[in-house]
Amino acid sequence: MRKQEKDEAPQEKIVMIDVDPRKNWQNSGITVTPEMRINITHEKGKWSAGHEFALVDAEGYQFQGLRRRYPSIALGALIGRVGNSKVFKVGNYYEIDGSDISGNLFLRINDADDYLFDNQGSITAKIIVQW
Image (spheres, rainbow, N blue to C red):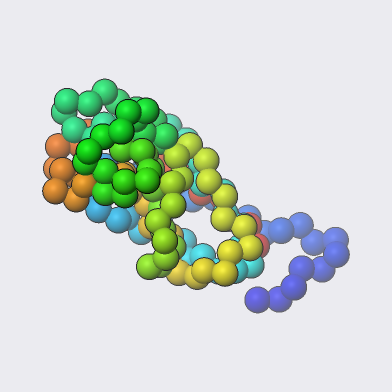
């Protein structure tokens, strides 16, 4: 990839992805490279981690649910990973800037794999990619 000239504005791409809480890792269609800056925001929608739970935004639940796939992150939170890298909480906003990781960007709800079937709703994430 060529370096930006002094007066050039960064190039930008915006991707909207509907994240289904009933599915495991979902490919955003974006391949992350170190020179990219990526902002992921919760654009709209709510979801639940099961019929017995209220609908919430991408931050997930305030209480400590037992069914979390990743225990250090709130149940029901929007989570992400790049390739096979460490999982991170996206929530309502997350930024990847100057990362040394590369690969496809995946998103999902933080819920145990065996309990995805009873989840409801969906979240639309807005992903802004600059390079």
